[in-house]
Amino acid sequence: MVILHASPVGWRSVDWSLVVCACVALVLFLPIFDEALIGSRAQFEAARERDASTGIAWGLRALQEAPLAALALAFAAWGWRERRRVDVRAPWRIRIAALQFATGVWVCWLALHLDLHPALTWTSSLVIGAAGAVAWLLVSIVIELRFRAIWPQKLAALVDLFECRARAPGVAEAVLRGTSIGLVLLATEFLLILSASGRSSVRLDPLNHIVIVSQFFLSNAMPALHVAIIAVYQALLVTLAIALAIPLLVARVRPTSLALVAGVIVLPLLIQNPAVAMGAVQPYGWKLLFLLVHSALLLLTFLWFDLLTVAVAVFTYGFWWGNHAILLAAPPDTTVTTWPAYGLWAAGVLAFGVIGFRQQRHVQ
Image (cartoon, one colour):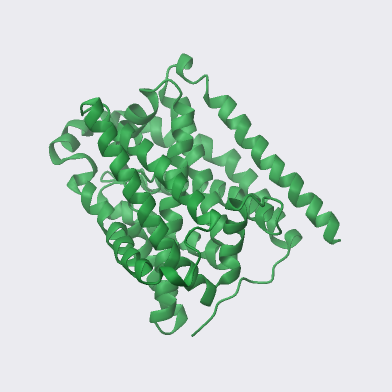
């Protein structure tokens, strides 16, 4: 079996260069996003009736969720069979399952509460959230076994964080790297939108830019809180897709380079969930093309670093995307929670930065 190890790169050689790239991305992506969104708003309004007649998300909403759901179901059955080989009650596993349950329930409630009776909405949300949590418990068994055999170091930081060991080696570095990479991903998305906006067939997806922004965020009293919850949900989905698909491909496909190319091709099919803000364009072929670029960047992030870095990168992407969309689309009186949310995010990143700096000084 081929075992891939993270490259022996140091804090100074990579992390600070990523921070510089992230700062540049932060300066660049805001005007790009404004131009892409506001410049296309008239095109959106003209396309809304046409999109409504064909179904939101091109009539593929259920199909978009099917590949990852099918893969997770197969791995859940595998996990049930292998459950005696690991500690099923490990705190990190239970805490991620609880997070999966909470975010799953909330996202389902946001999606359903305007269309269904409140009792039916809560019942459906609780059932779907519980199913997701149980599925994670079983799937995480397979993830742990596969990573223990191939990439034990790539799961360590994620486990340490959810074991409440934020000061453990590698956790602060993963958070800072993931934050930087998430901002770079965001800038990449908007550069792609800007480069494709001249084509008459390409437009921003009304599901993400109109329906989700209005129904999930602006219809609630604390939109920034819902942005954070959906960002966590996106991070769990994308991290799960990578944790399931890549080790399986590396173990089954030869040579390893072909397995990684297959991973870049497969990942867009797994992360195209409507709740994921990446690749939020139409028509569907362009969406997959955008997701292909993001998949390549996320796969490189995973190979160079670890799962926690990937999760933080996707969370950062979703958090900034959602909050900036609120600032653009909402009346001023409804954006009161957005700036404090940015402040809390910055305080959290700064806290991990202090931890990482102290660890680096201690090593020196």
